[in-house]
Length: 180
Image 1: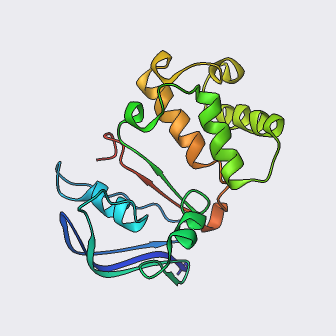
Image 2: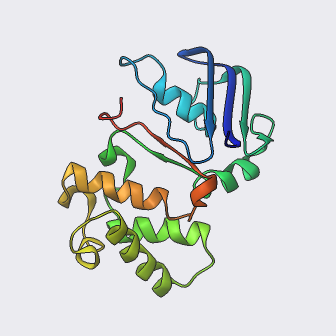
């Protein structure tokens, strides 16, 4: 049996009450449920991104053997994006409307990789190619409102993998409505 990568035990946070979840290396797990049942809250709690007023009231969250709940903001930031990525349900509210797609992907690249602006642009183009976005160099110069919803979702996927998470040791959470 594969090694546990993510383990959530008895999570209590906002709309979630007593959730248990285990994801092993190389495994894909989907959360399915009605609107408002806690799928997004679960993902936000794991990444410690709950909105104001939302708090984790109990439980344990372990990622790659490290207990995340007592970890400080710096430790969580090093995991978030670099080891765990989240793709939010509504890409239009997740992307900054006044920045080009390229600027936003390049920011994600530079946050996780020590690189020049030119190398970050090349990597952003490569990431858009990886997610199957046509004309990636052209798309880098566009703003989110100039892309279709599916294209914006692919931009978010590119940003989620910009931290180059290890294939065998990463987890991704999606709150895409198609996955819900």
